[in-house]
Length: 287
Image (cartoon, rainbow, N blue to C red; front, side):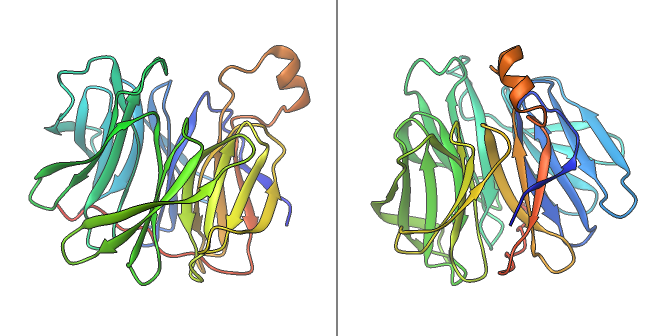
């Protein structure tokens, strides 16, 4: 398997990949521009929505709407008009923080975490936002709240805290959204764990910032496969394509010197690679 550039996006900080099964289109964000982007792999058409402040992630919701986690709150975006409607902002008292990675479980609960935007203190929190917009703080303090995913049978939740260099596993109750019995699944030995996704066999794919790689872990935390990347800073991944056998991987150029960019000119692009095992569809927000 050799990842190839799918979108020559040259993002400053590409993140939040999300594949719409219904539309057969790929969404992602550039945190620092800031903007939301969409790409159609058949027509190669792209659309971009400019956003008022830094955006950590995106998920679809009902109709023509989606949810964006902005530095100054979580908002609903009308994908036709681009209009934003504020929803909630549980960190109004922490203006130095911003929201980072987020994802929905298979009942449509939106899980999103925060981080110190200057990466100088451990002031982040992981939140669960239910269909009725109830916000529950789940884990705090967190360094850089990152990758989220669930096992195919919905009994295990995975979560990464980048500075801790850990991917955690939790017992998960899909009926209530309760995550319990935290334990370390993986101590990452190279780079730091960033965004992740789970395939249909229950294996965890984790983009590892600074390590030039995406790693496929078995459910017991052992390394199954290392996917070498042509860039140092892969940021996240999700499955897409008609059969969900295309792994899409976002990346970043931020912090790279001119010399670095000469060695990795594709930094910031979105990559794709065909996998033997298909992924699982992304879940939209139910609220």
